[in-house]
Length: 325
Image (tube, rainbow, N blue to C red; front, side, top):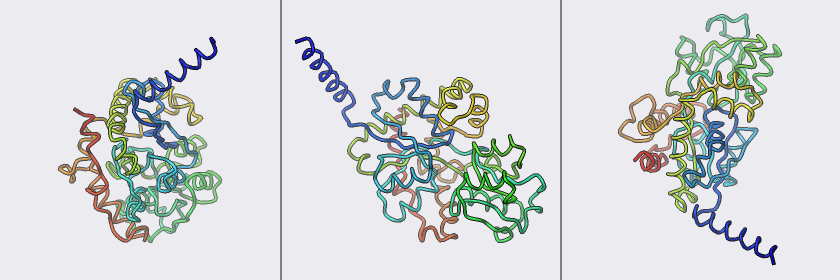
C-alpha cells in the first residue's frame, strides 16, 4: 500500500510540474562559445526554474552540427551566429531570431605564425579557414581594413579546429579561429593575433534561433527564456570570476583561462537586446538589421546565398520586448 501511495505522489508531482510549466521540454542547442556556455550559469543558479522556463540544454561538440540540427528540425532552438542563420532562412527553413546573446569582442581572430609581423607579411600566404563562415568573413574584413584584397591571400578550406592544429604544427602560416583555439595557439607560442573581433564591433553577433512551429505553440516560454538570459548577463557582469568557475568545466578549461575567454565576448542584456532587435535602431553598430545586410553581402559574394533575407521577416523582437517590461 505504501508503495502505491508513493507512486501516486510521484505521478501527482510530475503532473503538477507539467501544469506549472504548461509546455513540454524545449530543446536549446549550444556549443563551445562563451556567450552560449553562459546558459550553464543560468542552469547552475536556478534561473530556468525561477522563471518556469522549461528548456533542456543540448550540448554539441561541433558547432556546425548544431546549426544543421536546427535546420533539420532535430532541436527546437539553437545558439548560433547570425551569419550562419541566413543561408537556411534564405532556403526557406522556418526559423526566427528571438534573442541576441552577444557580440564577439576579441574571441574571433586571424592568427599568424611568429614570422609574420603585419598584414604586408601575409600577402600571398595561405589562411586556413572554414569557407563561407564567420572566420572567413572576419578575415576578409580585416584584410580590406588593412589595405589588402582577399584575392591577395589563398584561403584553404578546413574546420576551425583543423586550422588551429595546422597553424600550431607549422603546416600553414595563418588561420581564422575563435576561442579556445586562440588561447591554445598563444599558450603554445605557436602564433599571435594579427586582427581580432575586438577591432570589429558589431561584426559578429550571436543569437538564439528558433523553429517557428515551437515559437507559435509556446510563445510565453521564449519571453521567459529572455528573462532568464537577462538575469544571467547581470550575474556574469557582476561576478565574472564566479561565472567563469561555473562555465569552465564544461569546456575543459580552468576558471582563470575561461575568465580571459569570457572577456572577449560582449554579452547583451536588456538594453543591448532592445537596440539590436528592434528595427528603429537598424543603423546602429549593434543592430541585427545592419549585420544582416553586411554579412548578407559577404555570403552573396561567395555564392552561399542568392538573395539577402529581409530582416523584418525573421528577426522577432516581441520576446525581448515583453521580457524587458
